[in-house]
Image 1: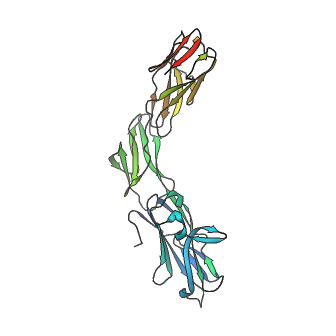
Image 2: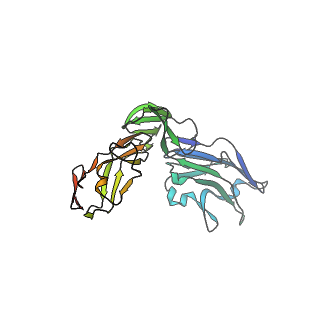
Image 3: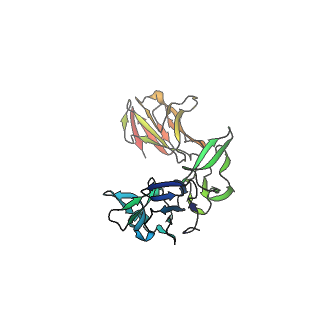
Length: 313
């Protein structure tokens, strides 16, 4: 059993790779590993030496990812790993290990084992080393048909073992599994957790909330100037935006910002924006520009008198 701070432990137990030079040899038990944020990673290597050399001749040995002035930097002296790194060798000194607890995405790097003997200048590093990839969780949304969506708990690399995922709807547990079906247009919030790591969950996915529309400029302007409308909606994945004029099938514009140039009475009518993502869609309230130049948006009024547009909050 490896040293562990509790929780998920990632063991590196397959695909042995040997690095050797002048009779020295480092055999990593695996050269690539994927681990979830917050888990504990356990890396193992075996070392052998040339004839006539004893393990007591090894005066220093450690793991590193960085170099300074061409020399490896001991992980234990790296402030980014403070309190999270343990390493050592077993009693026969032939097998050595590295333990990293509470791994972070910034820990993604290549880890190498190095040692030095009593002979001046004699040192050896097992290279290439072990590449660690630390991943968070994301919910991927895929449309199954016009009615249903499939949510999948996704990591950026393949986690070792057989990870289990819990699904939550509006912060309440609903199901276990790597994927989960939901109806299209749902306004609920869905997230997934890796079993054993309640503080490590995906960001919630949800359809757009009702969009809000802002108007610029918010001071007086002359007829013929431009009016810029901006639509925004809370959504994950991020929403795309489309602008419509009431009773028209074709959109007037796409994108978060809609600018009406050379403003005239012909632009009068009701406008609204639609926010849409993979989870669903939502429309803003109507924004009215009257033929007389009066502009109404919720409780905000913009009044055009004698071709002069004023904005009143």
